[in-house]
Structures are given as C-alpha cells and as structure tokens.
Length: 318
Length: 277
Image (cartoon, rainbow over all chains, first blue to last red; front, side):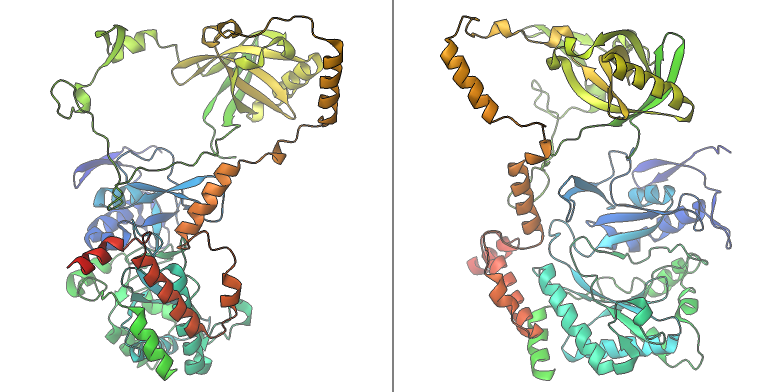
C-alpha cells in the first residue's frame, strides 16, 4: 500500500508528495495527483484570493464519498515555513485558533497534498481582519429552479445594484448557485457591510417578487425560486474561494464569470438545472478557460467601491 | 479529546499495559504577537553574532555551555545523542508509595493515561488496586528524548500520569527566614481557629474562582475584533429602535468614518497623510 513519496520543486521549496495515484473522485477517476496538479497550475490566479486571509480547509483524505472534515486550526506537523495567523476563537473564550494563511504556491501545493479539496476564505484580509474587502450575496436556487430562472434573478439583482451605482462581480459556487460580490473600499466594518447587504437583499426580494425568497428555512422555500442569502457577512464567516475545487462528481470549480455569460444562460430555452451547466467549469477545463479569459475577478474587474454614494442613491430611489 | 501526545506502555513486573497519553491541563493564557505599531507588520527575530554583528545561518550555530564566565564547552548533536536516554516509550513502575507521603511540591504536570483496547482490563486492575491501597506508583518515564520521574495516580475513573520534579530541583524552605515552631498563646490559637472555621467550606469548588484579568482582556479583544469600541456601555438600545435600515446604515457609515478618523482607526495613517498634504 505504501507508495513512494515524490519530491517536487514548487517555487523555492522542495515538497514531498505522497499517494499521488489515490483516486479522490471515484466516478471520474481524478486522483490526488490531479488535485495537486490543478492547484499548482492555477496558483497564479487563485493565490490573490487566498493570500492574507485566514483559511479553513475541507479535507477528503479518502475521497469525496468518504469522511470529510473542516480544519480551521493548523494541522499537527505543519511545516514551519507555512504562514499562519493566531486569532481569538470567535465566540469561544477558551483558546485561540491558529489559521493557515496561503500566501504562495508551495503552500497551495502542500494543502492539496493533504487532500484539501475545498478552500474556504474569510472576506477580509490581514491586517484589517475586521474590515471586509467585499460583500457577498449567495444566490442559491431551489431544487426545481432552472438555470434560466437563476440567471434571470442574477441579472435583475445586478441591475438593482447598478441602479445605486455599484458594480458587482459574479462566480459559480462550484455547486448549484452563484456568488455575487461587491468589492469594498477600505474602512467599512462588518456591521456596516451586513446592514448594507440586508437593505439590498430586502429590496431585491420586493422587486424581484416570486423569483426570490429570503426564507432561511429550506423546507419553507418555494422550490422553483432563488434563495438570496446575505447573512454570510461577518467576521470569521467564510466562503468558497474563487478557483476552489468542489467535492462533487466532475470536480467542478468555483469559477468567476462574465455577466455576458449569465445573460446567455438567461436566454436558454431548456429547463437545464444550474448545477449541470456549472459542472462544465471543472478541473479539466479551468486552465484553458483561464488562458483564454484571464481572471475575471482580477485587477481589471475588481473595483473597490464606496457605500456612501450608494446609500444616497438608494434613499432617493427606494 | 484530541490527539494523543505519546503512546507507549506501563510496565511493572510482568504486566504491560498499552496506553496513550493525553493533555490534562491547558493554560488559558492569551498569546500576543509583537507588531510594528505603525503598519502592524510582524516583528521578526534575527540571530546576530555578537562579534561579527551579522546574522548567522542555522548551520553555523552550535550549543555551548558556559562553565565559567566567557568559557564555553561546545557540545554537538552527537554528544547529546550519546547521553540521551533510550526512547523506550514506557512508564516503568519502580515502587509504590502512599500518596500523602509525597510533598505536593514535587508534582509538576498531569497527563491522562488512556488504555488501548487490549490494555483495558489491566488498566482497571491497576486503578482499583491503587485506589484501595491509597497508593500511587512511582515510575521512570521517557517522553521523546527526555527522562522524567512521575507518579501514576487514580483520579476518578482515570489513571493520571503526573510528571514530578527531581529532588535536585526543589528549593528547600531553609533558604528563607521563617519563625521557629514556638509555643503560641492558647487564646490566640483559639481565635484563629474560630476564624478559619467560619470561613471553611465542605468542598473545594474551583469553578467559583475565575480568571478575571483573562476574561476582561478577551472581552476587550473580541469587541475590538468585531470593530466596536469598548467603553460605550448602554448607548445602543436607544439607537436600536431606529427601524429604518437605511438610517441604521447611515449611522454605521458615520461611525466607521469616525473610527477611521479617530486615534484607534486602522486607516489613521492614510487620513493623516491626506490632511498633511
């Protein structure tokens, strides 16, 4: 069973990798070696969203069908060169939590070698961990919600934000839904961001009517609508980072999209499920997509925005 | 309970009990990082040679014992290996003694011992025997490459391995100046005893005593981390009545602006630059 360890040079480090042939996505045959190769090849585009943020790992040592665990605290035996940050555990008074901070490619490869399939990040960066650098809205489609409906809601949601002068970005979650974000200028507290998110979500729910719901209890949500979740704003709350793989069949990737792509989805005639379409952004296609499109959340698109003018407009319009 | 920190066996006579060692006490102490006040950069340490006044790489560093002022004996890795005890991974029981025959000052740090599946029976046997005879086992323990003396005691359902100090580490009370055991007036003794009686409790309840300093520090840190300023006791309720979310947001924006302009704000430096320009 014991397989030889393989040494690989990544940046300035030589890493010892193990069990590269172990299959993690059993129905697709993707192995831990594929996982490592993927993260190494997208490091340049993935790292800007991981750097300086406390990280929570979701590890699948025996593949996506087997046990998974969330790891917030630095795993035992973490090499000394891995960056880390020690923070008081939110809510807990007992001890601190030391988070991994992935600032470079060797760290990313090391994480992949530990079968960390999903990487969850904070929405704030060091040293200003109390100031979110973006507000996130989770557009989560119900079980019978079609891709067309989800895309339509996403576009209307974008219009709503544009009407108060904000320019959101969008990505797939890698699962069923979409993440829409508004990059923020420095200096806003989580409290501020949260109230802002609530105002927008409530307005969206009234304006978009039956297509959206703010109902948090899954059973009570209309199954063909999009659940608009704004409560993921808060210190210590995490989201799936851009270019993170998911532990689902097909090894989908949480992928930043052009709004034009969402427009194309909204014109679809079929009743395709969102997840089926989003699964086309996966471990095998992402490298090519990045080479073609570049990082759609990159500096060219990532515009830090101020909330004061948005509020002034909202007060007049809403 | 999390990970075992050590696994090995308790040995006495012909009996071997496979066990794992777990932390039994942890410290509440908060750890702080040293930062550069200006930009919150982490402070790094450098190893500087006092003669060359230059940083020294690890492979040029050796360990020296100062046996006389300025005079060192250099020891290398091999020297340390020569005297390291064999990593036996065992708790070797040497003798048994009644618990109150041990000066409590000798006890240093307790760990829990957990038996593996095969060791459960022998573990229970040792625990019951120690409890019934009111004795503890004195053992020699090797953890990693260090050797310790330790006591194995039954505490509730568990066996606890308590690391002990060596006799040479205990400072005798004769090193301080204390009054002799002279005869004290009966009346005073009676008074003192009465006072003690009135202040006595039946059980020691450690939960009654909390680490106030630690808790207050933590409350302060949590408040700062959440972006709130601390000593603003009960101003909030009146504001919370504001129903219109837009007003709340306006207020929140106003507050973060103040926070930024104030002395505690993170963006202070940026602001200052602006006004200076």
